[in-house]
Length: 253
Ligand SMILES: Nc1ncnc2c1ncn2[C@@H]1O[C@H](COP(=O)(O)OP(=O)(O)OP(=O)(O)O)[C@@H](O)[C@H]1O
Ligand SMILES: [Mg+2]
Image 1 (cartoon, rainbow, N blue to C red):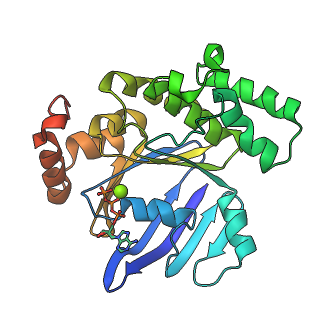
Image 2: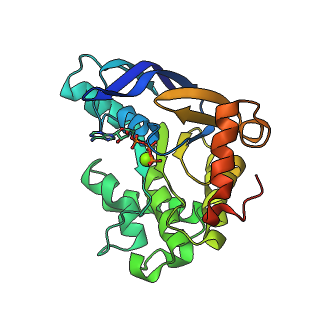
C-alpha cells in the first residue's frame, strides 16, 4: 500500500533522512519510534509532500511519484491517497462532530449534503460517537475529539492514514479509546503509520515498529519484538532512556 524507496532529505548541510526505504502493507499498522530529531516527523511529512524530499520514490495506493521531479497535479494525486490525524485534533471549533467529518466530502469532493451525512453518520458510529454526533468539539473529551479526528480522516477513503502523536495530548486513561478505534480500523483496508513517543501505545497498537535514529531505520520488526526483546544496542539504549523519563515510569516495557 505504501512503498518508499531511497528517500533522502536534508536541511542545509544536515542529512535528516538518509536513503530510507520501507514498505507498508494494506491493513498494516506501523509505529515509528526513535529519539528526538531522528527524522520521524520529517519522514511522515515527506510521505504527503508537506516537505519536499531530494530524491527517492514514493508509492501510495496506485500512485507512484519520483520526488526529484513531479508536477503539482501528481503531488495532489499522491496527497489524495492519504489523510492525517494530528496531536491536537485540529477540529473546526464552530462545526459539530458530524460537520467536521462531512466537511471535506461536501467542500472538496462536492458530494450532496445528504449523501455526505450518511457516510458521516456511519463513520461516527464506527468510532463509537453516534450519540455525540451533533455536539461541538468544546463539549467533547480529548479522546472523543481525537476519535472525531480519525473519523474525519477516514471520510475521504484514504489508502493511508498518517498519525502524528495521536495520543500525546490525552490523559492516560483516554489513550485506550484511541487505541481501540485504531485497532478496529486496522480491519479495513487502510494502511496506518503512527509516529509516537509512547512505547506502550506503540507496542499495543502496531503490527510492526520501525526504530529510527539519525535519519536511518536502525531496526524494524514485530512490535513486541522490537519494544520488549530487541538485541540492538541502539534500540535498547533508546528504550532505557524512555523508561527513565518520569512520565513513562508507568510503562511496563
Ligand atoms: N524546517 C526545518 N528546517 C531545518 N531543520 C529542520 C526542519 N524540520 C526539521 N529539521 C531538523 O531535522 C531533524 C529531524 O527533525 P524531525 O522533526 O523529523 O525529528 P523527530 O524525530 O520528529 O523529533 P521529535 O521526536 O522531537 O518530534 C532535526 O534535527 C530537526 O532540527
Ligand atoms: Mg516529531
